[in-house]
Image (cartoon, rainbow, N blue to C red):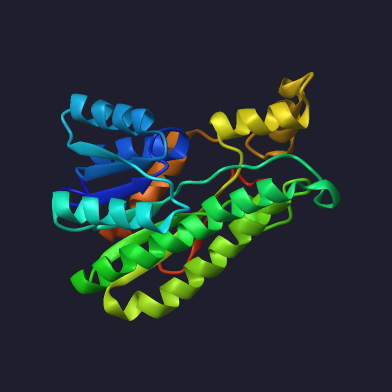
Length: 256
């Protein structure tokens, strides 16, 4: 159990990749603080961990608000004493729209949650880890942060910026015992991909899935658990020399 005795903090832990990561952290021996804007979903994840014999608690937070971020960091430290691993994961997809028509209010919301939320997480967790002189942070970017994503301008811009934050943070804190990396998932079988399919082709969303999987060398979407295992690896001592990296988890989609 490579995270035995560790404290893991996960945002967006109520569903999708975040929930899968919470469960995987628990299976690896970590105690988990589950954070989500939807407290009921976060509490359900924590309850699932506790039912399996693990240890978890939940907190509600809007990651775009500094006071909420400070509160979930302080809540984790006050409850468990420290933060060993931080999965800075919460994010939203926005809408499908060309840039020439992209709604400004949606742009602001996507950037606020995805990018500012990532920054605020780093801003408030890094001091804790620097004081400990040890810790690992994994930010959720996307394949849309490595290549352009037509009609998803806000999402793609936010994920490109997260890679910049990841590399900057890694360069700042690596000598002080803290590592910062990012994951770049491709299409994963979660609520978000269902939403994107529906927005892309409301009359036949399954056609979007067929087109996406046809372009993928593995011929399918990834599963949240497959991403979660990489997250826990990057959080563990097994990846001690990995810092400032952007891990593609896309079945080879961007390789071809």
